[in-house]
Length: 536
Image (tube, rainbow, N blue to C red; front, top):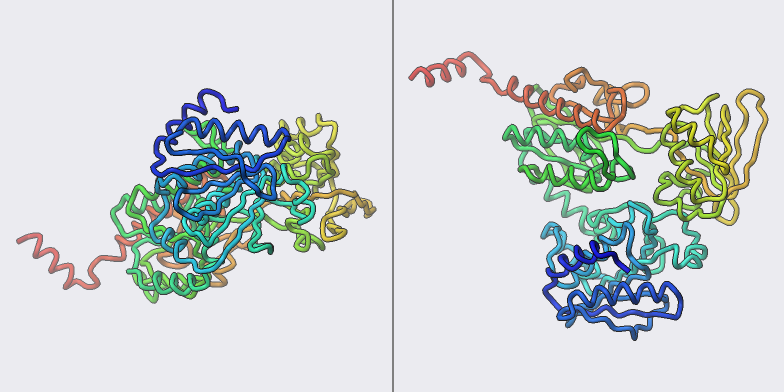
């Protein structure tokens, strides 16, 4: 089942199991049940003193298995063979069930344990989805640490009938107590915010009580992380407030153009960014949305950052590194059919459209790469590009044209995404030259048309371009004293990870220089006192 190298690594991890637990499987006579039995038997054989395999389960989903710690009432079930991207999720679930402590803040575990409602989660995932493991691991952690939380992890490829009945067309998708709960990547903190009704008020009070920072970074992507590292290395009080550490990097499957890092994935790089920042004394405030910024009354004074939960943070300087998000095509049907055929991540949701006809809107690098990836999974791909020619690199265009199941439509304007019975059924577009209209029957539309800066919360406080980008100079300074900006949210050209990281470093150094120049004695008497002390 597992190769020798994987077995050796898994056996080393399982040495950390401290408490006995059972794996209780519900199996049938099908091939997947045989595969699951082999996997679980191999795991049990590695720690027979701590891990027991039973095959007398009675779950409605076949095959499936539960992890049950001896002497506790835990409810974590896998209706899946968690390999691929979910193999790490399986290892962590085994370790946590076996008493190995998770690398999670103590207050998060306490918040999980204090949940006082019955929560029955079902998470649908695919083994090729790089966004799914975060949610699987978060909900697994909750089930293991609170007996009132139940979590079932379901492989949509194995239980296709459920996918069709619930009309799930994007993963990860989570149901709570039988009702739709959320879709997309979420951290455990984000999930807790949604189910713990008192969390927002407690967070607001805790955050507002924090002492002022010398540098506060808004955003936790490459620009924000670089700014935090450079600021912290100056020995000054540094904080990071972010909705999701790593930002949009979390949604990037492959990174192969960062100097010195030949190849990595977005989630891996995001995790490394956070770990690097945590190596310093940086106060990270994750899952917090910023809604406003109030400039200081005078240079060197305190700038106020307002939060969605009602809390506020204060700092003598601020670095805005809020990044950008996928641009919407803004046609009828897009919002209505999101997660019902309209998708933005081909790597995550592509497997759900196996054997179906789909479209990719956008002919830049991201759109053409998406089409190439999808062509290996789906029946046919239609690429719809607004301009007369595809804008992607020529090597990608050449590859795209070599594929037999791809049709390219250039100089076409998307006009509507149609739906039937609550899900996508067709795409309408018209020829910009002739005005003729075309309707293509299909079941999926992947939007890949660029980015929008996350700067709306600034209003007129900070000067922005007509595209919403924060205007900065060569030092990353904005028009507001003490406020700097970096990365994809700014007017800096080339929205690349390495560019954002460099800009974040520049902004932090500029903020430090600003602090130095605005902390000198306010009058000559103060300067004289310093001189006298030094002379003495």
